[in-house]
Image (tube, rainbow, N blue to C red; front, side):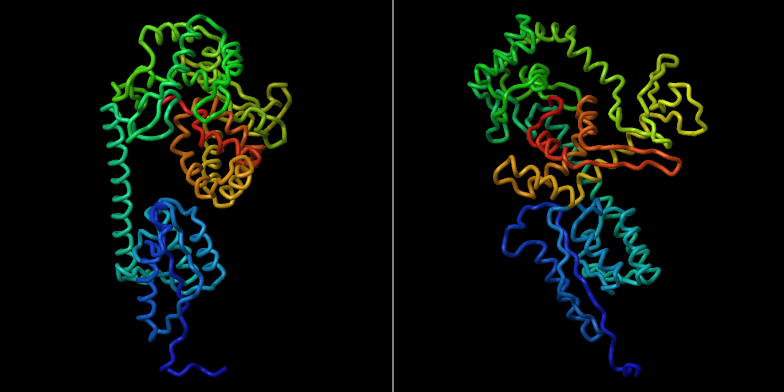
Length: 439
């Protein structure tokens, strides 16, 4: 085989990666992704003398945050790198590839292993030199800092607005409509809300009240029959007192109240002693979302248990072998509930943001919801993590039961088997605001 003449440069295969955090403007003929790509292509063309060749594949992630690696185009890019199809990755700015220092370190590790160079058009350096790495880490640290500062500003602004009683978006509660970013009383729905409070205050049992509402054709805000969970969410929503609630603290709201304080107090005096409340309290104290799903090394089920020491509750999952006094040498006879539950919940959060699950959910949900777009499904599933902590423990347990088929633990770790048949139910809960505490 003849060696190339000194004047001939070997071909350097280049791929352009672009990203935009929001979907706003992506429908335009020439959008932000196109602008990024145009600059990168021009840069590659300027390096033609060095043998740079632009590949035809597009790696565009529109509507995806730089704080995660769970992006479809990025995954395709990494797969092509692993397959040895690329030599250089070109981006407009480094924060288009990632805004997380830890995630970027993982990407650079892949680049180094496959001898792929990373180039930023607006921040000239390359990752093959020690100075390039130092510059990269400095720039990326500032990108991550900027992202965190923006997040803090948004949270602070949201909290300040709630303290002023302003409506900050989301699903309007039954009895109100949103106009010009403010809650306005819907007279027809407000009469229904007042009727629910009034009848409950007269000691009408919840199940009978639900049946009465069904016979009258009364529907919730989403046009569905009012069930027991929705009934109690209405009865516990302090927005009807004219208040705005943020993280458990109530502030005077800008909107008009629907329920008088005296009626609210009568209703909640009854709720305090109701069986529903006692059950909710019990679930709140000792939730067991993995009940019936967790199995030990020998394949035997692990059942929830707890103990109290000095007034503090400790929860565990205990092997049924121990409960039946059977001999077992396993070190996993009893495991702390919080630890294994955290592992499972983390896996669920990751799963709901994966492209495969987004598509599977969309396919299941579009059979029930006409005109549903994949983009709408992705938007709701990506909200799951921020809404998780707002759910009642009972609702959290219900979602785990919907999405997890089985969890097998061993000395090597936890093997979590997930199910997709509960995805459409979870999506509808997020879409309709079901399972959330009143805000």
